[in-house]
Image 1 (cartoon, chains in turn orange, yellow):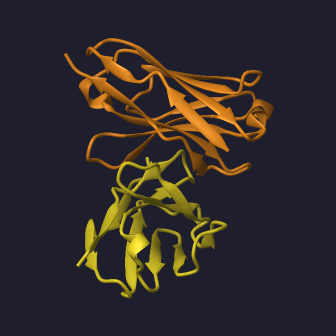
Image 2: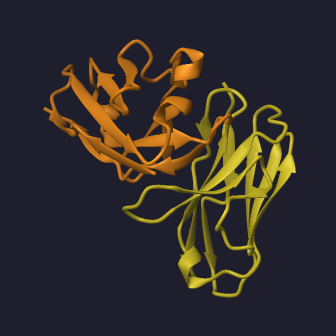
Image 3: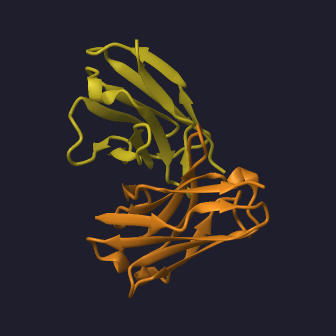
Length: 120
Length: 106
């Protein structure tokens, strides 16, 4: 399993950023995929999960990002995207792409993370 | 929303010590709880799922127990590689992590 995030960087408050995750080494279509973030010096925070291709790719979001973030997956390209709009200073974090255990709701594999800094 | 409370926040221990970390949920999880280990600058690593099932490849000195609202992660004999931060996570309703327990060298 390999998960490689990209797209992180510096953005001003109110701006947008799109993160991508390239997945390989497993049947991407079959697995729910999750984004988790970690603010500097803080703990882990679940951000979003999108269900697998068999269940229609339904997305779920933490209250802290609902209405501002969206998630999508391309099962033909094995990629997962996180579109982040109306960014706030408190969205500053390392964003991890993660693969859920098949048929379960916990993450079993993680990418190395991509940093997002929201600052003026 | 389900809230998760871990204790202690920091734990000082020596190699060979038995270490126990507690995680309490604001409502019953049955056994829908996982434990992760995270080292500085690294992604988390899954240790335990369904409260007590050890992930493949995780040393047997790690064990998880509990059900309902109270759970524990135990390291039977702390090894140098175990100094890290540990997180519980519920997955009964969406996902919520505990705030973490840092295990540091005494």
